[in-house]
Amino acid sequence: MTDPDWDVVVVGSGAGGSAATFGLCRRGLRVLLLEAGPRFEPAIDYPLDAGDWEARGLPAKPGSEGRYVYALDQPLVGEEPTLRSWTRVAGITNRQRTRQVIGYQHVRGVGGTTLHFTGESHRLHPEAFRMRSRFGVAADWPLSYAELEPWYCQAEELLGVAGPPDQGARWRSRPFPLPPHPLSWAAQTLGRGAAALGLSWQANSRAALSRPYHGRADCNYCGGCLRGCPRGDKGSADVTFLAAALATGRCELRPDSPVIRIEAGRDDRVAAVLVARPGGAVERIATPRLVLAAGAVETPRLLLACDNLANESGEVGRNFTETLMAFVGALHPEPQHGRRGLPDDAIAWDYNAPDAIPGVIGGCRFYNATGENAPAGLQGYALRAVPGWGHAHHRTMRDVFGRALMVGSIGESLANPGNRISLDPVERDAAGVPLARISAQLEEQDVARLRFMAKTATGIMVASGATDIFELYTSWDRFAVSHALGTCRMGDDPQSSVVDAWCRSHRWQNLFIADASVLPSSGGGEAPTLTIAALALRMTDRLA
Image 1 (cartoon, rainbow, N blue to C red):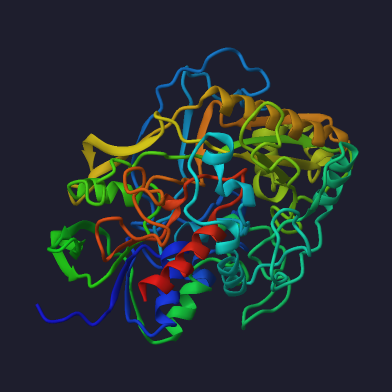
Image 2 (image 1 turned 90 degrees about the horizontal axis):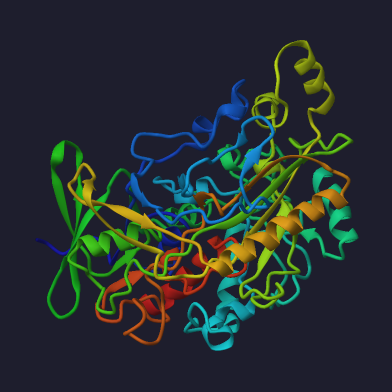
């Protein structure tokens, strides 16, 4: 084989892979970026102006959805009336004895799951970096907030993050690149409720442009972030990091190129990756340096399937953390114009610190989830908030349409022995690689945190004047994961971690990991995208 035309091979084009690709290209390295899924064309694939917009999520294209096996056999103990999910129309939504599988919300495609995210861009609380030494749970990070802070700034500049002047404990060395977005009608209503409870309420930090930036148009507040952004104002990886990398001329992007095996070489170096091609063919690609960025489920799956590669510590696949959440929906007496404004535009950080919730380790945050999860169109109201049929139903729909509000809460998820990614012994993909088996369970601290989250979210809703609650759903009886973390975590000790502080394998000298799997703790509900990108940018300094 002749010498390859690239210096680094990157697997996965989400926040970590695309940020790493850009960081390497700007330092003069040539990068081959392999993405398992297809490329999306925003102006074509995200038709938010179509008549059936409400029924559409992010479009599924061939190869854009992965397959997973779920092992959620922990019984639901007790009644937990404040945590059991229900809607006014459907009643109790999970009548099983175990949690209902909604699924791992992962996108295989150029841009990864950032194509689907709302654009929340959060820095971790500084105290979240010392969970083991301060609180006896999770693990300490091998770096501090101060060490990562310059890279947070770089990631925010590249994404075009809009945010407020101050976010409390999250100190900054420079302001956000863009001013905060104006609060929507719904956010202002909920803000009055939060204030009545003594909670702060401020503009959320969002990778959505509040004014034109670097050739991209500003947000038009259509509210369709989860369905894909046709204008390119949302800071998904494809229009930010990856576009900048391609502009250097040193990046070759290959979509529809799933890596099925990593080939180990001599002298503790990986030699090549094998890529599945249509018709059953397999291509061998040499890897002078390899960056894995396939996500906290697919990265450990690939390593485990390659004869436990980089698993000298036995920690690959362990320490999985999920998305712990509680959402409360209600109808307000006055119109709230829920389809207008930016989703997730306002947030309360009061309980975000690891010791902020009385009697519980691990924090949470509360936010305006109206544009993200509340019914937006007539279909949503009919299926979730307004039961019935006929003329009476029509009259009620006319009366309440546009009055829905949603308070969301996301909290700390602590790793436990029952949370892990392993290989399923039976199910395999088209290339014969075992599927990832996702095991998850909740411990009492998680349930206690959920109780606090649901109670406080309900309190904000009621204090805002929306007493007509029509919906509640929580992680107690539903497994829906958008923030999957921790399965190849970083650390100084090779016996208890997979990669070092620079995201390099403790053993394999040319193997790096740049995705959510390296995070040692989840934080108190922060969206992880910005942290993933900041770590990837920092990693490229050492790799280059």
